Every structure is written in C-alpha cells, then in structure tokens.
Length: 430
Ligand code: IMP
Image 1 (spheres, rainbow, N blue to C red):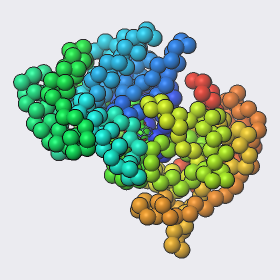
Image 2: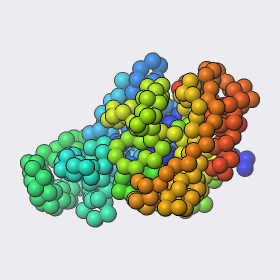
Image 3: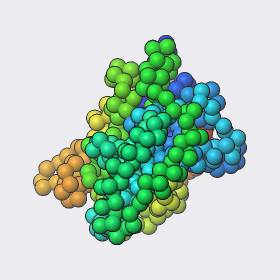
C-alpha cells in the first residue's frame, strides 16, 4: 500500500495497556484520530513541556496540532468533565478549534443522574460490585439501549431535551430513592450540562459523515480504542466488564462505517497483565507472589489515571492474547512496558489453561471456568540490565529476546513494536 493504512488500535487485555503511547506515535502519520467508545472512565496521563495533564476523552492526536480529533457516536460524554479536560489542555497551551475537535451529535450524554446511579448501585452491590470508575458509564449506555438516552444533538432543542430528562428522571428517582439516595430535580441535572453545552456547541457535528468523507478524500484514519478486549460488554469477562464495545469492530459500529475501511488492526498488550476493579484474573500475583505484584505496581506506576486505584498485577497471559487476536482480528501486537520486568527474576508466562481435565489454549470465558481454570506456566530467564536505551531488537539481552519470541510464537501474531521505557522514543521497532 502506497499510503499509510487506516488503523485500529485496540487494548488486548483489561485496559491500561499503554495504547496512548502508540496512538500518540501513529497519530503523527494520520489525518483523523477517532475515539470510538467509552467515556471519561479511560485515562491517559501526558506530560507536555514538563506539565502533566490527563486525557479522558479527547484523542491523543490533539497534541499534533494539525489533526482532526473525533469523539465518536459510540462514546458517552460527560459535558462537564469534557470541559474540564479542555481547560486542562488550555493550561498546557493546547486550544483546539472546531477544525481540530469534533464531538458526534449522536454521542450520548452522561448527566449527574447517571453518576449518582452508578455509585449508588455499586455501594449497594456488596460482593457483587464491579468496581466501576463511578463515572456513570453503565447507566448512560443502559439508557442508550433502553431508548431513553439523551444525545448531544438534543441540546439544540431545549424543550425536547427537558422533556427527555423529565421522562428519564421519573424512573431514575424511583431507583435512587430505593437505594437510599435523594431524588434529583430536572434543573439540578440539566443546568450544569446546559452550561457546558454552550461552550461545546461549536464542536458538535455529524462525526460519522465527516469521517466517512475524510476517508473518501484519501485521508488517513486512526481509531483509538479505550479499555480493552476483556472488558468488552459482549466478549469480555462478563459481568465484570464495561458497558461498551471495546473491540476493534466497535470502531465500525460507532462511526457507522463499513469494515473495508480498515486496513490494519494492532493489539496493545503490556509485557505483563494488570486489571482494575473486580472480576476474575487467573494470572494475578497473589499469595506468595504478592510481593512480585507490588514490585510491578511500583516499577510500572500501576495506579489508575482516572481513579488512582492500585491496579492488580499478574503474569502475561498468552491464552487471553490468543482470544484477543481472534476477537479483534489482530494483525500485530505492540508489547508495552517491557522494561518494567527488569530485575523481577525468572519470568512466568501463562501458555494454557486446564479446566475439568481439559486443556485450553484460549482463556475459557465462562464465569465458572474463569474462576476455576488453572494457568499452565512456562518459566523464562529474566533480565537485570537496563533496556531503556535499546533501539534494535538485537540490542536487547538474549533473555528478553527469548521471552518476546516465545510470546509471539505462542500467540501466533507478530510483535512488531516493543516499548522499553516511558519516553516517546524509548521503543524497539521490528
Ligand atoms: P465502568 O467502565 O466505569 O463501568 O467500569 C467497569 C469496569 O471496567 C471496572 O472494572 C473498571 O475498573 C473497568 N474500567 C473502566 N475503564 C477502564 C480503563 O480505562 N482502564 C482499565 N479498566 C477500566
């Protein structure tokens, strides 16, 4: 292909794989960067000229002045949080114009009623809690499929909007009060969102049509997934998932594009595994391995960018990656944070699962198998050398090369990119 391909970058694990770093790098070769699902539950910390800012919804292409960044119809957008994010960007000197930022008018809006409901439900769920980010993601997507959601476009017609919120609140207030919370008034729910909308108004448009036209005009598209495959509402470790379609196909349903638009799908994985929130995590370092988990957490700064929660850490899970490769149709894998394994000692790699006498080479996804299946490990020599300066595969210690080649061979997908440090250029391209 003479031109850069249209790419989807998707999390191959439970989120927080380091997609932002890859997106940031590939954004320079794209014209349009599209975030296709999720909301302010995601978080990506950026350091711009020494100042820290966190992106939750705005695609990382915003750092490359000349790109169009799109928040797609499949996203759920909290207008107040988005404004806050734009203010954070302004503080580091980034002031997007409508030529650089487009919010889909079809995107559903998260209002305070969704956040109250999210938190009240979690508080009432006891052991069954999902460990959500509390950002109202689930309730907003529920409203979407229940056909009672509020969309950005509705804000252009205040009377219609008010009627929609009134209708939605009738039911939500019954739920909220039954969970011990106070009922909400239409005004308190609407006022902050309407205020935020006034500033967001110039950025709202028909994202699907714009992206489709950009494609027809030969512009290069980059789709940025949030969360990860194992958190997909349909294909993830249900019910411990988020409420959106996090997988590659989600990019197409979100924007309303045909599958042939996409040329390349890259899965992003860490060289180990993390997970935030509740739910099964078979290769988690617990018990006698808890100390290793703590070392990874500190070395990899594994604390949520959105909630600050410590992430659960574990060994790399090949069967989960094989599952991801199948569900997303991955062409290649980017292996992030390889440097974090430095000094950890021998590296365990989960290569299969056994469950009720059977062996599985993909993570078995039924709830009982997820809890009961036993990981089968192979052990590899670790490494003590600092690898952050390595830029070619052959510069890496032999043990790192063997580990990476083993992952690649067992997943059956080439690893074409290795991140060896947090810096923009601390990578090995293969
Ligand atoms: P929700 O998306 O806030 O409803 O949370 C549902 C589950 O997805 C919880 O386990 C969260 O911890 C997890 N989750 C949501 N967003 C992210 C993310 O960006 N990274 C990792 N986990 C996430």
